[in-house]
Image 1 (spheres, rainbow, N blue to C red):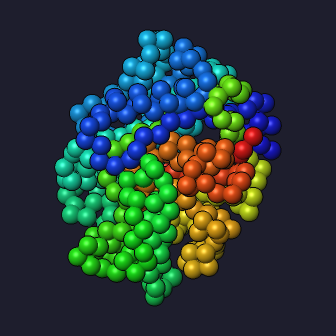
Image 2: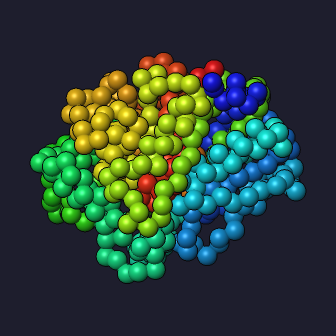
Length: 396
């Protein structure tokens, strides 16, 4: 049973906007929000006054003084005066959290057109401020000093994975994932890192690719980024610039916060969010044409192959070794370059993933474009597998 069959109405992505990701010194949080919101509204073919509600996904966590951005979208037009606007925060999944809140407003019948924005400014802050802000998403490390930050947390995940399943060529596998995503990022005009680094470079520790937290090298880590993305959600077509994209199903699942209460390599709640989204859409993994997943670190993408059911636990390397997740494979993963190459302005990431997927499904992805994809998955998470969101999108 699809979302439409279950709730008796469609949720359509009818317009979208996307900024470049990277170090955007000349942009402010406000300018980024206004840019992408304006693009999304225009793309949907509607007037600002037709927006019933606004959700803004932003993590911040002390990375910038302004922690109350919900009304910044009203700067787009005087016609947005008095429109309800809410900031949504769920760590690095804030963008998808905002997307699902907008979806639920449509399903509840309290809105017919919702503007969802994800935005973050990070690069102006020092590494210590960013590191401390991101560690606010970890139960055990929040407020504590750390030289490796969130990289150290995912490095521990990689170490547990190696101990459980054998770490033989884990470093090479992670290097291959990094190289794939860097290669894909070359074709993404929004991407922060648009350089094909090659497998040898990504697999090798060097002065230019140092070890950040063993076994994760610099190329295994997503960069600190600024950026924004926006999407208009509607219950019916709006006559926009492209055909709409249908939300067929969605899922959310949260895991326990203390690390002691979680299996470090199972990503159990991530797996449940996949099952819920696929179940609502009434499809199986084999029905997907591509997926955009949360590769904040390469070990996260490897575990995602297993959490989504592409491989059995401990066998995620098969997906990369046998080419399944490459652009010409049976399930291309992160054709955009992922967080690894596209960049990771944390509050923007989930909305960006939806926008990039909508572009693919409408044949407007430019150099990133796959051959006639019809169905996609978006997976976004906050913390070390804590807050998990999956959407299934379909071409109309």
